[in-house]
Structures are given as structure tokens and as C-alpha cells.
Amino acid sequence: MFNCCVRSQKTNGMFQKTSFTTLIIGVFVVYVLHTCWVMYGIVYTKPCDESSGVHCVAPYLAKKPRLQLSIYTSLKAAGDGNPNLILNIEDFDIHSKFERKVNVSLPKKTRNNGTLYTYVFVHQAGVSPWHDNKEVHLVSQLTAYMVPKPQEVNLIGGEDPTQQSESHRKTPNVPDRPVAHWRSRLTLNIMADDFSFDGDSLPGDVHRYMKILQYGKKVQYLPILFVDLLSNRVKDLMVINGSTMELPLTVSYDTISLGKLRFWIHMQDAVYSLQQFGFTEKDADEIKGIFVDTNLYFLALTFVVAAFHLLFDFLAFKNDISFWKKKKSMVGMSSKAVLWRCFSTIVIFLYLMDEQTSMLILIPAGVGSIIEVWKVKKAFKIQMHWHGLKPTFKFGKSDESERRTEAYDTQAMKYLSYLLYPLCIGGAGYSLVYVKYKSWYSWLINSLVNGVYAFGFLFMLPQLFVNYKFKSVAHLPWKAFMYKAFNTFIDDVFAFIITMPTSHRLACFRDDVVFLVYLYQKWLYPVDKSRVNEYGESYDEKPKGKPHKD
Image (spheres, rainbow, N blue to C red):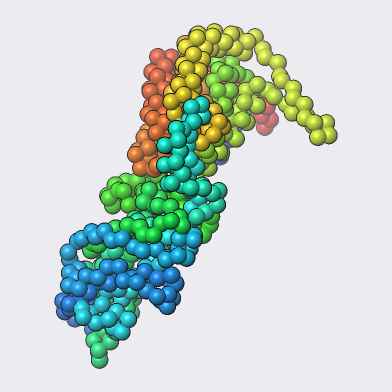
């Protein structure tokens, strides 16, 4: 009976230990399968079978009518703002891809931080689009509002008069509020598939772009016109000022399949929803780049990789917090490496803020900074007490083993300082003389982050040195470390997809080298089952418990 109770307790303990992680993985698998099913429902539409007697909606383009493309600009979205014709293609072939550049005259209201709209008509050839009952049209905005990028100057030498006057002509007075920017690209698509829809189950996403005509019992839908807003990138925006009389507009056209059209509509709606929740034009641009700059197959791979990145991030966060929450001794752990990671993550966070990086990168960096500050508190055994509004800090004492670890840590840092400090100071001085910055603060943050990115991996060496001295890696949080290592390789993929500073991109590849060195040490120093780990427990030690009374 005693053995049965012990086995029961072990089984219950094992179930409690693994149930949460198993639940998370189960939810993750269900999420991925559900998303794949939803994506399949988006890209695949069941065609209508007329022989089965179902009410079908046939394409108007099947009759191959003569069409005309007309594009206007207007100050109002309602169509009564004196529309101005900027492009007219009389014999418009929907299967012919083209790209045209036109110069658009800007009204006075638009030059004074106003808005300008475009009307895109596809109508019968030779008939005015304003009087054609078979026309289809869409209204899109040719202007966007953003805060202009601050001008960068040389902090020591300044600018010579020629460069200064030229920069003032480009951006006379750079304001700190959103101003009108010109969208220099207009991308148009028409769904050219010979596809008949089931009239009783029209897809809701496409239905709002359809215009349906009925001739007796026959029902047809006019050409489905689509303005691709995902192609409007921040890099294509141009600042509008009072002296700008006209600006160039590149009009590009291509056909689009039904599956891609439905997918693009959903992605466009998702970006719009994010902007309603407070995402800026720059934040939305990062998401647009994922969809526009990659093909659909690579996009599917990106989704799978991102899903695993999210899972590993959560599991690494859970195990890292659990490890440091239980940790009471810093034996075998480099406290200076912990302090450095805290400093470097804060510097990187401030740098990403200064560079106005996407929220997709900024938010995880901010959360990581908070966690690293908490780790420093645990590593140095800091206790904070409040006396009114004045805080006081108390540092805990170290035992003999921790002092030995600290001695190895200090020895490693001493050798590193001979190399690290001259390199950082020299790099900061070089950038101050030869590189332009927005402000002294920008120079300081860039100098610090360049030191972190370029030589930050050197601060990983004290932990490697401590591992070498102790001939053990059992004191490291290997579960959290392995999850983070997987994410490091996933970050290598995202480094080519999401827009980020070059130094931040290179740092992703630097972490791969550090990970491989840690793996080598794990192979070199296998775990001794009889060795006491960081929690004061041994694998060979029998569990302590109260004697059982029958």
C-alpha cells in the first residue's frame, strides 16, 4: 500500500508539472490547424454548377466587352470636388499588365496640408464614366499623414552653407506634428478569372466589391476592381509643402486571381483595424512589407515560423521566470553577465525607440528589459524598503562558493576590459566626427548600442569562463536557454523579412555563434547525476518526505 501511494504521488506530481506546458502546446496545435483551415476557406471558393439548378452569377467579362480606364483626382470623396482627369486609356485590355507615370497638379488646399482623392473608373469604351450604368469605380486617398523624419547633422562640424541651404529647400521647417505626404504609387487590379459564383452563398469579402446586373433570369457581375493599398509603402511617400505645384504618380496595373484577391482583402482589412487601434503608418508599413515583398509560399512559411516563434517565446518566458524565481544561489552564474544583459537590453530598447522602430520589435524589447531588471534584483539579492517616499536598498551577503564564482567573474572581466573599452570609445569618437545624427542624445544612444551590438557578445565570455573553471554547465537555465536558442535561429529568418536597423539584424547572427559555444560546453561537461544543482538538489538523492504512517 505504501508503494502504491508513492507511485500515485509521483504520477500526480508529474501530471501537475507537465500539464500546463502540454496544455499550451495543445492550444498552439489547435490554433495552427484552425488558422490553416480558415486560410483554406479564404483562398478556395467553390464554383457554381449551373447544371444542378443553382442560382449562378456569371462574369460580365465573359462577353469580352470594350472597356476604358479613367482616373480622376478630387478634393472630396463624394465626387463633387471638381474632378480632374489625370489618365485615360481608351482601349483598356484587362489582361495586359502596364505601368504609367503621370504628373498630378496639386490644388491649393492639398498644398496647405489638405487631402486629395483619386477616382478609378472601369467603364464602357466611348461612354462617360459619370453617365455609364455599367461602370465600376473605387475611391482611394492619394495623401497620408505622418510626422516627417528629423533632419540629421554633423554634431561637431555642422553643415556647410551649400548643404544647409539645400536641406532647407527639401524640408523648410520640419514640424513635430503629422503633415500631408504624397502616395507616389497607385496599384490597380482586376479579377480576370472566368468564375461563376453561387448567388445564394456569395463570399462576403468579395461581395462588397461586386456590382451585379440582372437581365431577365440571367445575373452577371461587372469587373471586380481592387485598389491594392498594401503596396503603399512609407518609402514611397513624399512630403507635400506649399511650393509643390505637382508631383509624380506611378500607376501600375495587373490581373489578380480570386484566391489572392480574397486573401489581400482580408489582409488589407487587418492592417486597417490595427491602424484604428493606434498603429501608426510606419507600424502598419512593417506588416505590409511582410505581405507585399514576399510570395505566397514564403508567406505561408513565415506564418508557420512566426507561430513557432510565439510558442518558443512563451515557453522560454515561462521557464526563465520559473528558474530565477526559485534561484537562491549565484554559484556558477556570472553576475556581471546578468548585469550586462540588463544594461544592453535597456540600451537596445532606447535605441529602437530613437529609430522609431516598429511596435512589433519595440514591445518585446521593452518587456525583455523589465525582466532583465528583475533578474538583476535576484542576482544581487537586492531588497528595497520604502521610508515614506524615499527608497532604501539592501544587498544580500554571498557565501564562500558565490565569492569564488565572483572571483572568476571579475578575472574574466578584467581581461575583457583591456579590449572592450578602447574599442567602444574609439567607435564613439569616430561616429561623432564622421556620422550625422539628429541630436547629442541620438549620438549617445547609437554609440552605446553599436558597442552592445559589435562587442556585446564579449560579455558572454565571463559565463563561458566560469563554466570552464567549474567544469560544469548544470547551473544554467537550460530549458529556457534552448527555447531562446530556437528563437535565435527563427530571428535569422525574420531578419530578412521585418524592417529593422542593420546593426540589430547583424546581432541576430552573432547570437548563433554564442549558442554553438554553449552547446559545445554542454557536450564537454556532461551533467554529473550526483552533483548538487542550483536548487541544492541531486538527481541521485532520494526525495525527502515525512514518514508514512499506516
